[in-house]
View 1: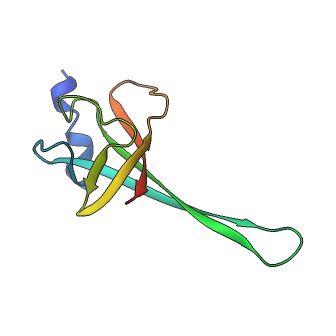
View 2 (view 1 turned 30 degrees about the horizontal axis):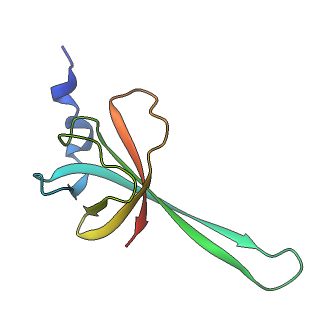
Length: 98
């Protein structure tokens, strides 16, 4: 039967290493999207890249919190927020490039 100890299978094939709080590395899935915001009256505007990391809820001894430093695939990030958890098995973290 499938259980909490089997969650790592979801990130095994295409996950990237995630390091946090000096604990052993785990695999996580990092997604990014870029939004462009234009100024309606002419030139200007800005672009914003959003990073979303998905890790098993039991990947670390506790869940990273906002303002925590975290390294994903060798790149340093800061945890921005924890979105509402839907299935309570996969933790989603919004990140900001450090």
